[in-house]
Length: 428
Image (cartoon, rainbow, N blue to C red; front, side, top):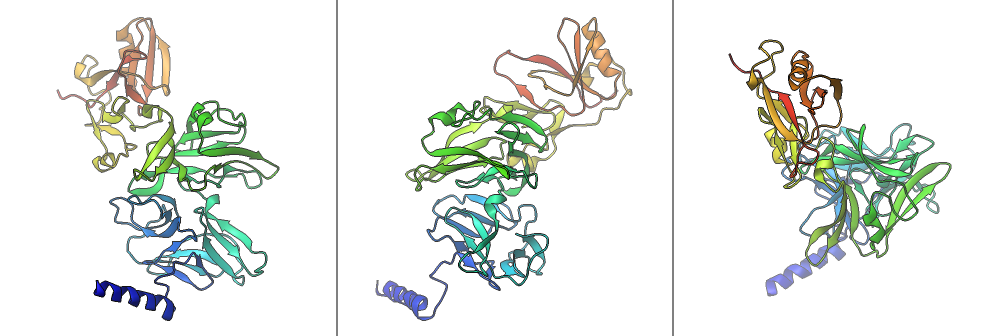
């Protein structure tokens, strides 16, 4: 006991007598100061922390912001260098020439807050606020600091209370949430959420191009396609539209509540709230409600099964990347065991085809009128670009070309059809 007391008093001596930073967490970086690889910034109320981290089982390092008061789970809300990881545990963030920059071990610039013409003579400070927002200010005039940049304007995958998801009418720039690639890689993934300024709604997109869910119109209280929001007692969401911008933002009724929206690696937008009693995140709602409604959830030639939320490859196909699938990243999809040798075999080879009873893809098909199922099959066989076909039994033949996405194994026969897919060419 006496030994512990000695250590305690020694720590106090270091803190108060030696003017050490060991015991006083700082929340700012001023001109010509830096944050080393082993240091962190902590917001004034100790709600958030900024520093270097390694996600999941990754060996790479990133500069990010995470909840400090969420224990047992490092929940990262923002990443500076998500597409430029650091390979070695040596880096620093600093104020340099009027800008906030991240430097690697060779002093090369990995990331910077500001781009374009920068005044190197201004006095700049970076501050980590207690709402999780990292801001860069010009404090040359100490009475009226000028905001130069803030992380809330450049979200990664998390929508925080007080932040915006919107559209700048002057620059035509959107604030967009983009999922991580997987739980160990914060690089931009395939799924995103952005605001549709024309219809004042949120839209989820695959590859920033294909919209697979829209929130529906805003009625001043909730979105038409997200009725769960009408009974939400945690936050208040609002829509603002002026000559410069239009955006959605939200606030929490109780400031002590820890809650956020994330564009998840699953392709779903989720609202999560931290439960202190059980030390875990609680899911309040997610969209799309069904995981198999996420566009290209299982990649090309992958089959989604809603009952157990799994992906599998069609028979005769194999995973392109076991490593990615083991990380719950199915975007690489599946590929044939062997390539199809066009016109190298005869049409009557049954082993050329695999048949599955599935919900078939909703796009990339062409409908033609034929008399019989065999004529439909011949139409696909004689077209090298044909990947698969279905026949409805009443003269309509549907032909698919290219990769097949959104195949789904259903638990009932509703919406199911038999789809015939070209597999790798049989021998002989």
